[in-house]
Image (tube, rainbow, N blue to C red):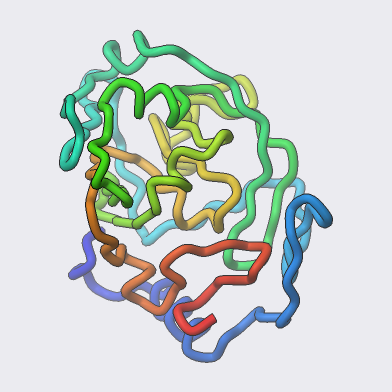
Length: 218
């Protein structure tokens, strides 16, 4: 689904939530003092949220293109991606729709190792992520490079399923999960910030759960 695709029920609902400031509590906490961000509730399942499309991408078809302000732009196929150093991460999920899930075990390529491969130029400050359905989301480079950031191909010891963004998705656990693009196919390194899909539709340009940065006016 691209930014120009027809409205879905979820898109309309989330835009309305942004206009109404739905779910906001007005509280601020930090992860070192409270594991559960304000306005969130715990779940034990993993809810599925998307924009109405779940692309079917085989390993033989999958590629990841890395472009923009980097010294070594690359296009990785599945085999080349798996020849990169493989990492395991343990982190929580916080969705802007108020659910959180603790202790998710991921496997894949850490964002640190990807950055070592492509070497962003000194003037780069942001990244734009694009999925196989045209979904986009933006991140500061510093957040993309967080210690827990991972390009995940497995969850809880099993290959990442199609409905959760398989064969590969980004995981940036310290931000709301809309920033962790599913079905990732392209990463562009940028000098200046640009709004992605939900950022254009009323969501915050960063999305820090502990500051409850759900919407653009928070």
